[in-house]
Image (cartoon, rainbow, N blue to C red):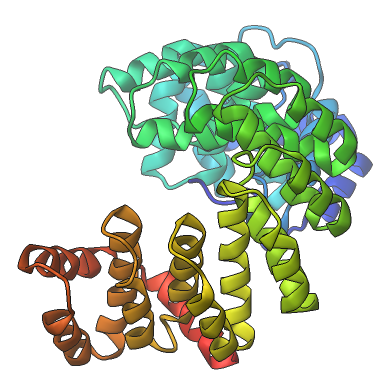
Length: 449
């Protein structure tokens, strides 16, 4: 992903304020200055309008997507809104101008010079310009060129890299395409095969569509096949709605057709409601069908444990058997283990066999593994054979191997009711699955406790 285009020496407020004060005349003079530096003979009559090219990616270096959009709009206003006439410069001259502008010491000159030059390029030259910008490690030009390409010829751009003629575009391309033509971007995305490109595109395209028009995004979601992409678009759209009006988000989720998307949407909305209105979230969890919620049950139960474990147990115990109750038990085990591991373990011993107990044990083992991997492994080994047991044991052993590899190996060699093939598979999987970042978080949390 490209880095934030706003340099550390020029914050967003200063950049916008400077642009407002200096206005369009300075933009034009800067363009002319950049052109002269690049070719020595650029005409001062060149047109200066520029398309709407966003300057920043959401969340990078502390600049929000809303602030970036505001800056984008201001640059578009200052640089002109009319369609740019055909450039009087050759593509090579324009690319040279982009390179020269990147060397400007002034942040304002650098941004305006690059963006105005990029706006002159036609679709037949952007691919070459993008490769040059990448070779020069020019993140401003890369982002501007990707957005320009998405606005004037997204299908051509995707065709080129799918045919192996260049590197895949980044999030700036996908985000701009989703903003300019959400239906077209979604149609292209839905036909992508599984892989890294689909994974990268899903974040930029689905997130942009969801935030730009949440209700329309829900309609788009109905056009996607059931699965994780549909659920992702639904949950992000409802999250955007819920930020402004939780009741509207809830009504929208309840109106969705039955299926994984509706379940994911309701789970997302109730989880969001739980952060501001725990009582209402509890009520919804009881009213909705037993297998509707997953994460929301855990969030509600965890919040109740922080009030008192007894209130959490009282609420969760009367839920109907199913996904919501299992999720609630997981939330209780996780939060209680952080506060009183002995009391939590004692409660686990009272649970009868079943999905609810399995969910609670898995959550308990996951939380306690950094502090007591041997105890966590012992609890995890009581789970029935299957994916859940394998996943929890793998993660626990991955942590234990880093803390005390000899002890982990000894336990695995002697663990009861475990075949030789399972031992070997767990040892190999634990070595491959270890996540250093998550491990650091575990260690920090353990140190804090």
